[in-house]
Amino acid sequence: MTDTTTVLRGATRWTAALIVAVGGIAWALFGREMALGVALGALLGLLNLLALGRALGLMLSSAQQHRPAAGKKWVLPTVLLLKWPFLLLALGLILWYMPARPEGVAVGFGLSLLAASLAAIRGSKKPPATTPGNTP
Image (tube, rainbow, N blue to C red):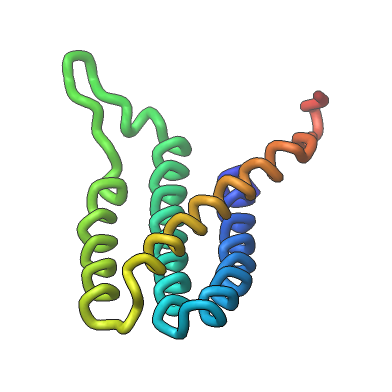
């Protein structure tokens, strides 16, 4: 299991925990629409992180394939470019058709970034895994 996979799994767990905690508080203080916005924003942010992690993982696993030839421009994986229209479309659908409050969506999106940060910090504190023939 790579470090990217570990961080993304941790981000997923932290996002779920933060959705429950902050969503519950938002429901109690501001109502169902705010809690729905928090949950949908966090899920949209997590989807963004998962797509980004997958694209970067693919790019790093085959770096030679994406490296530009001399005098050419850098080639990005299509996932990095194509995820934005889908995320913006999903955001538009959430804000237009669902009774979610926009500020809740913004808070939820921020929660997914916080979750990724917490997962990365926790992942950096673990000692590196040793493999046979590779001692620290």
